[in-house]
Amino acid sequence: MEFFKSNILLIGLALGSGFMLLLPLFKKSAGGVPNLNAAEAVTLINRSNALLLDVREDAEFASGHIAEAMHIPLADLPARIGELKKYQHKTILVNCQRGMRSAKACDILRKAEFTQLNNLHGGLNAWIEAKLPIVTNAKATSVAVKKVSAAKRVAKSDVAEVAVETSAESVPEKGAV
Image (cartoon, rainbow, N blue to C red; front, side):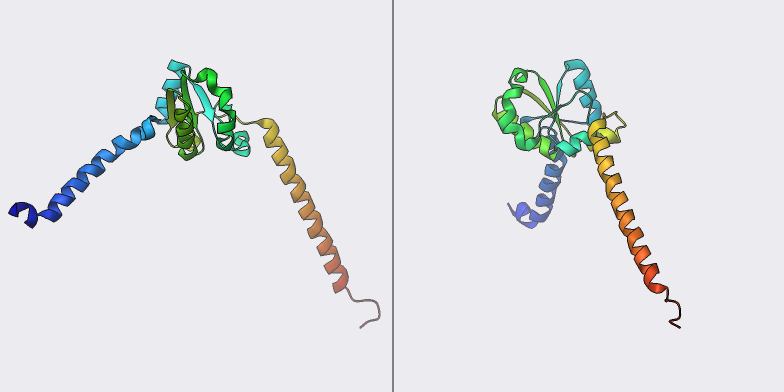
């Protein structure tokens, strides 16, 4: 007993270190849903013919997504869960941009009794970092590019008008000198 009293700090440090070593094991399957890295996700998609569920917002999805991904934004998931009922006992890989929203989506799906859920750890950022391909929605991207181009044209015309007004004011009238 005297040993514990005199070495309480060292015992606490040892227990804390042990916990920190085990922490990644707990995070590997947070909430009962496995977190997969990009390579594991590719294997899952190829071997299990997994459904890929992207829970990002519309603009994020349009800017680039994993091929053949089904898109249901996280905010819409509870209302649209019926669309996924046919996949209730099939393998589903859920992704978002960084992995946080997809973890929440996995919780929602798990509570709705989906059985084979997986979370893409690191989300689309990890997928891109692993140099895996993404698909962009060309139509949405071209609309965004047109809006930016139109905004630039308006901004340039405003600058041109200001330049004309400034140059007209700075020229003195004849005989004013």
